[in-house]
Picture 1 (cartoon, rainbow, N blue to C red):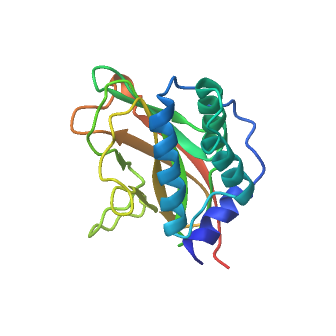
Picture 2 (cartoon, helix red, strand yellow):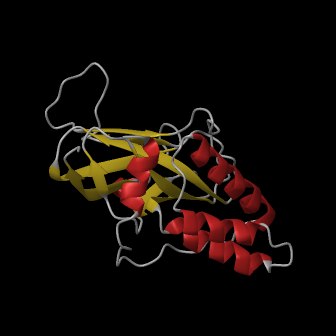
Picture 3 (cartoon, rainbow, N blue to C red):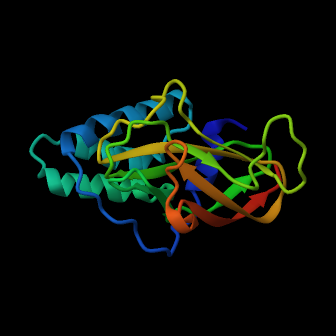
Length: 212
């Protein structure tokens, strides 16, 4: 199954009842450019957003008469629906993470892409990274580790954050088991940047279907 199908299967799940993510006061020209690039890069990976969502976003991006604040809010609303996690970086570069509204549905042995909303108050430009006790580590065998997890920091994506107040990154998850399984995903932007009290970690209960 292609990355496109893996993402499409998850995107086709009905909307989650979870509350929407907070709106970030973003620089509209920067968000506009970044969102165009995001759509193009997802298409390059053959993992585009659903057609209707992409069309609505492009209409907003191409409307030169749109009110910047309204357009920014609308684009965030459309992208946030596909976010598994929101990551916040405070002015001291401390990271905390919270659950996004997208359903946590995976298919065994198939990579699935999710968006991660990044609220970067610290203007950090380090790479965003993900880890966790259930994340598979290359070269190590551990029965409790069942999911491959990574932020796409290689081409066609940039290898680090832009430093803008708002941006969206892409998280790739590939499960190696089926059923209901929980994973605690931790995020950081460099050593020592996790928030106190383990708030950079977010537990997520996944539903993993067998591969067809």
